[in-house]
Image (tube, helix red, strand yellow):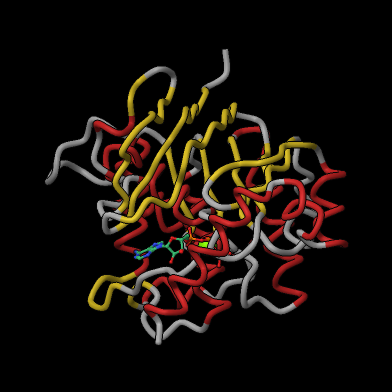
Length: 273
Ligand SMILES: Nc1ncnc2c1ncn2[C@@H]1O[C@H](COP(=O)(O)OP(=O)(O)OP(=O)(O)O)[C@@H](O)[C@H]1O
Ligand SMILES: [Mg+2]
C-alpha cells in the first residue's frame, strides 16, 4: 500500500480572510500532480497549509498522511513525517550555514525520533553525499559554506531548494514555482534533477505556470485552481491546454469561482496600494 496524502474539504483562512473554500486532493507516493491556476487562486496557500505554516488556519476539513491528521501537528513534525515544500519565496537565514542547516534537517528526516542534542549524521558521510549531490546539480561546493539563501540570486535560491529535496528525499514534495526566475538552461537542469531524484519514490505536487519543469516530469494528474477550489482535474492534456490557451475556458465554465478569484485579487490590489 503506497503512502497517501489526502486533503478533504479543506477550508483555509489567512488573517481571518477565507482563501481556500473546500479543496479535495489525494496524492499517492509515486504520482506526479501538476497544480495550475491564475495568480491569487490559492495554490501557494494550499502548499503552506499542507506544510503547516502557522499563519494559514484550517477552518474546516482535514489533511491526513496515511490516516494521521496533519493539522494536529506542528510544521517540524510534518517535515519529520516526510513532507517537504520548496517555497515560492524562500527565506534567508543569516548566521546559519547551508551545510549545517542541511545536516540537521537531513538527520531529523532520516531519524524522526531523534531528540534535540542527539547525534547528527557523521560529518564525513554527510559531506560526501552533499558534495556528490551538489555536483549533480552543478552547484559550486562553496555554497554549502554560505548562509542559507543570504544574498543568493533568485536562481541560486531555487537550486538550493532542489538540493534540499535531493538531500531530504521526502515522501511528499510540494514544489511551488521552483522554475520561476530560472533561465532556460537552469529550468532544464531543474526538471532533469527532479526526475533524477526519483519521481517514483515521491508523491509530487508541482505548482507551475510554465511547461518546462514538467518536461521530464509528465504529470499523472493536472489540477486547475480558481477562487480557492480545484475546479477541474485531468491529465497531461489539460496541462498542455492551459499552457497554450490560458484560463479563458475555465473562467467561463466556472463563473462563481472566477468571481471569487477576481474578488481575492482585487482585494490584493487595494491592500498593496
Ligand atoms: N500571508 C498572507 N496575507 C494576506 N493574504 C494572503 C496571504 N497569503 C495568501 N494571501 C492571499 O490569498 C490569496 C491566494 O494567494 P496564493 O499565494 O495562495 O495564490 P497563488 O495561487 O499561489 O498565486 P501566484 O500564482 O501569484 O503565486 C491571495 O489573494 C493572497 O493575497
Ligand atoms: Mg503562489
